[in-house]
Image 1: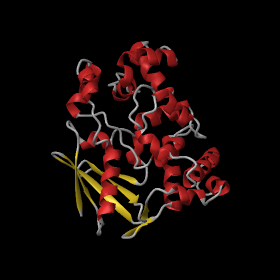
Image 2 (image 1 turned 180 degrees about the horizontal axis):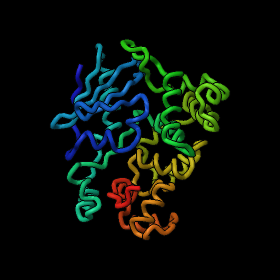
Image 3 (image 1 turned 120 degrees about the vertical axis):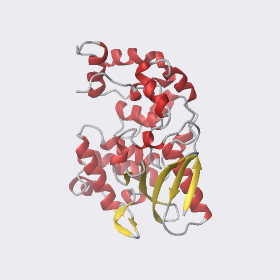
Image 4 (image 1 turned 45 degrees about the horizontal axis):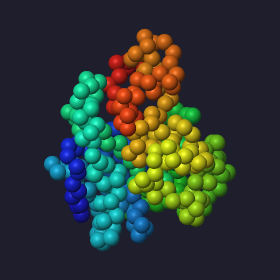
Amino acid sequence: MQIHLAARSPFSLQPVVLSHGWIRLMPFNEEPDHGGMSYIDRLSSGKVVELKVSEIPSGVTVTTSGDLNPTEREEIAQKITWMLGLEQDFSAFYALAAQEPKLAHVVTKASGRLLRSPTLFEDVIKTILTTNTQWAATKRMCANLVNQFGASLPEDPERKAFPTPDSLAATDEATLRSETRLGYRAPYIIALAQQVASDQLDLEALKDSDLPTPELRKRLLAIKGVGAYAAANLLMLLGRYDDIPIDSWVFKMVSHEWHNGEPVGPAEVKAHFERWGEWKGLAYWMWDWSYQG
């Protein structure tokens, strides 16, 4: 079965797929033959399906196996629209980027959209898994979560969807520490799953919230395990680009880009992107850095 979805022009699928590391985390998978991607999803009905996404001139086509009822098709359409940012309007950013050589590629490649998970719950957990660790460990922890707690794809039981809040809320901290090997993150993941599963926390409502960015940041920082860097990353995924996720990597990049390799701090990083206003985070993310070390 195929579902065709329109995207706001200009649009290119591959820049979204490769916009950051999420495509390397289960249950995402890159499909290099056609520049698309696949994702194993558990629908609200409980059905587990593989969603294969490829580009068409007006947007994307989503191919799934098996029969889907109208409600399931609509759910998939809404999820893919969110995951790929099909409705996002970057015209204002493109107008500014066209005047900056370091961002010219954004316009020519129709970049700017950031790949998102279908739920903010999944994005928060994956973001927590990136903190204070190496990327290889992030991939391992995410794979362990999916393999241990995710629902299986019927036609290929070894492939699984991301765990639901209910499935993670039903486990315990000891299991997440010893078997899933999440370390200090285990109590954060349990607490988040329990809050979402019991409806104490409605993360999905934040996706289309009209809260000012500072207030939205406070809501994210109130989640245990989410610090300033994680909150800035999540704001980017929520389409709020007026903050910069600052870490040691950006210090290195800014140092070599503008300060001849001399040490810099957060103030210097923010100063160089302040002129981009509401787009400063995206300008940082898409910047064509001179230093490649």
